[in-house]
Image (tube, rainbow, N blue to C red):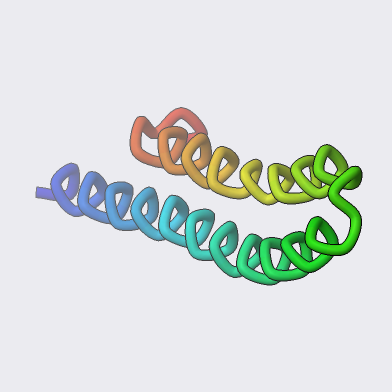
Amino acid sequence: MVSDIVASYRALAAGIAIAGGLIGTGMAQSGIGAAGMGIIAEKPEKFGQVLFFFVIPETLWIIGFVLGIILLLGILG
């Protein structure tokens, strides 16, 4: 019985961690994408630099996913 409750809380925590990472990535990329398109419209040679800044927030969902897996598998406790 207690094991089922612990597993349920682990699954819930993993879902929240992954969802938080995805929501954070979307919020960050919305602002960066809009600004990046404005920069590229004025200076097309800045494409590589803008692409780099657009990719940086992708690490948020990767971190959320890894944290979710750690929570789900119970690696930390």
